[in-house]
Length: 265
Ligand SMILES: O=C(O)CCC(=O)C(=O)O
Image (cartoon, rainbow, N blue to C red):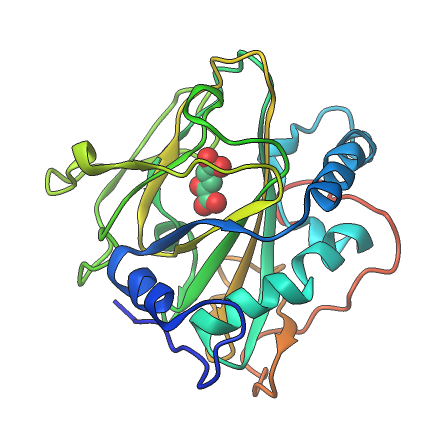
């Protein structure tokens, strides 16, 4: 397991919060956007969703930041980057983004998993910023984490699922994970959580009358390299610091309001 490398000068978090992230593998809840800013995000959701090809499901499509200026800017918002810098250190890049949305009474769920199990990235030094666009609560399927599960030497065994409602295809299969200790990450609109790429996390279905809308952006420290034989369309978008950012192809920030045309497209 690779630990966090906090900046010498913290920008958004306290040293106690950085220490808690190291120990538990997540931080939440963290208020980040104002109520007005959160309402503006939420109001924009139908426009963004309508940009997708009709056959695509919004929660099964990623890497919007490569195609859409508004969402690129959201990932690169200075307050978002301040939080990431406090955990990854001064030089890091953006490479991933995805909505995880569930309509009211939606059976969609996210099986327990470790992000790093899906990602051909090395060394393991990445963090996800999860931004709530709606409230995220137990009844509408908020994210859940199993604290401390990032502190294993190796990634855990995962099995494959065929469940059509599973938003991701793999599930942790390791009897050492104690799900009784799982924590609900309850967020108000505009609040965020931060999670380590090794923590076991997932979420249940939406049993409420309200939508659950969340946006994730993924960042890695400058030294992280992607195996392009696995993810040939991977691009790094430098976010902060001087790098060097020479380990991966560099992306050109979008200037228009486009949308992905498929996974990783
Ligand atoms: O939105 C969720 O419930 C899960 C999100 C997730 O798995 C992730 O951000 O890695």
